[in-house]
Length: 92
Image (cartoon, rainbow, N blue to C red):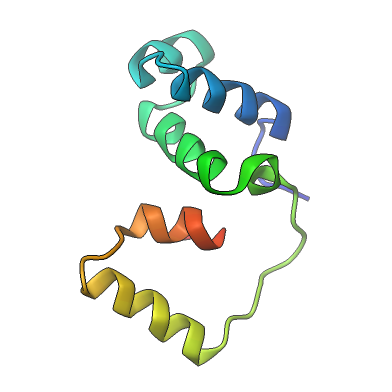
């Protein structure tokens, strides 16, 4: 079960509004979600669609190679932490 009090449909709606040009600050005030969260949701939605918000149960286990790949992407400056999290649907 998800820890988020927001449904996947709600997160998708807010993400679409942001991607369609509404500011994260306006959406934050309107829906009671931080502006950072709005931007984070939109980035994840842009990368993975509604699946980014699917309710996953339990913790995932990642291989050492996968972890190293993520660290190398970050250290090389190729992707930010937020972009890596969105791209691979992992928690930070």
